[in-house]
Image (spheres, rainbow, N blue to C red):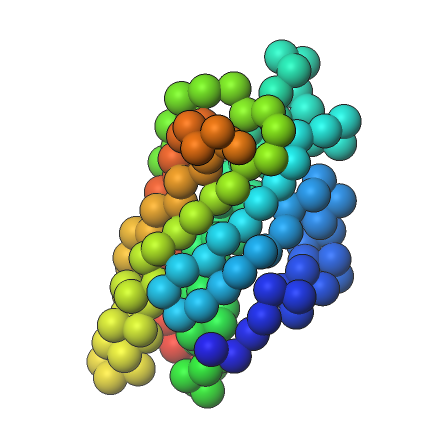
Length: 151
């Protein structure tokens, strides 16, 4: 584990300012799991008195991508990463504090090992589930991450 939640939040301020200004924050990160929260408010609202879907997407994507970034850094290899596809489902209005959790960290190392061994790019899907303060699922996101060795 090479990075802390605090370091990632500093990273978002400088490299992902839209996420930072809308309140997206990493709460915890490990090799297997990442938790990101965002609180509904004026900066991230939609006209329907709930959180704008794109803000939920930023938080969900960060819960997956933070682990990918960390594992790539741990590998010591020059590897690029990109979201190739995503799918989302919205099941309830997002109000209050929404917590996005991804527990798919186990998928990353295998993909890195394969791309380093073969030189071929790899793709893998990761899921992030957003729940409100009552524990009710408000949205579920799936991201297809692609990685490849940089030339």
